[in-house]
Image (tube, rainbow, N blue to C red; front, side, top):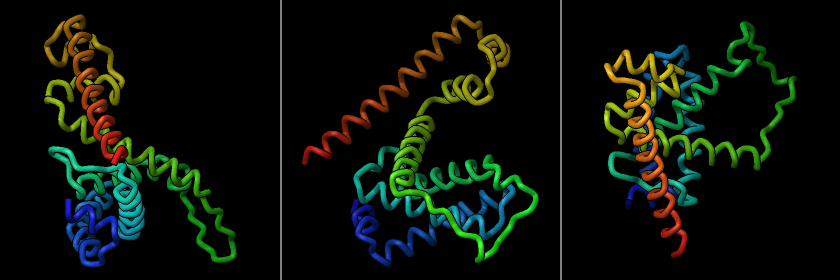
Length: 190
């Protein structure tokens, strides 16, 4: 917790340590996923800033299995995925000029985006705390968009049983989210 406090207070040594410990994993991830070193630097800076805002405002507190580094990585990963999906990244020609005015994102939009990114990162941590069977079911259903029948064939499970298991997995996630919300409310009381 002392590292978090120093991180929130912008302690230069802690910021430098966090950077040295976490930048290599973000760099490696982005290089392996169609990016270059400049992309990694930009994404890491954005993720570090979002993390700092969330720590300073009390929106991130470590849970079992989570860490500041993991949180930074998850935000960086989501930011990179968003960039890969964006139309500006997919365009063949990039125009870089100092003559073209830059349109800045409003403070409100940026704050909402940071809140959303923090929530997504928290959900990712909760998802990682699920059992392997739950992760297999939910990732196939929600991310791969497979039907319960397809998933049942892959996992050797009938669709009705799978429906029940999927429900139980979602209830586990909701329970973890409720515990996190209650913890945040307790912290805000003081």
